[in-house]
Length: 133
Image 1 (cartoon, rainbow, N blue to C red):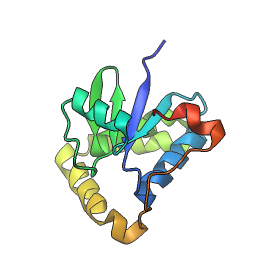
Image 2: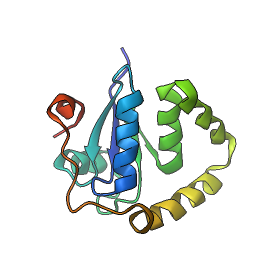
Image 3: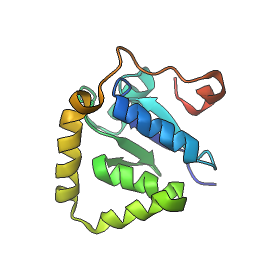
């Protein structure tokens, strides 16, 4: 059985929350679990993987004892969701520094372009099991 895959995301970012909602909807095999970067679980995982725990500008995929960051994390998730979404994985051939430059531009402006919430999203009762506490 494949090891648990965890997505860490900025819990107050509307774009990030929209991405999580997309993954939840398209993750038919329920491969992914989630934690906001700001949560206790998120903070513990960031420390475990020796990642910055006070910078919430990165989308993180933890899988097979490895941390994938930014565009690489997003593309790895897209590949595993299957369907049309997996086509995005073709962008993995673009050098990381170029992909992450685009990622950083979006990340830097995400609150301005997409807005933010006052607090982290609270999953519905039926989705609570997919989120780390």
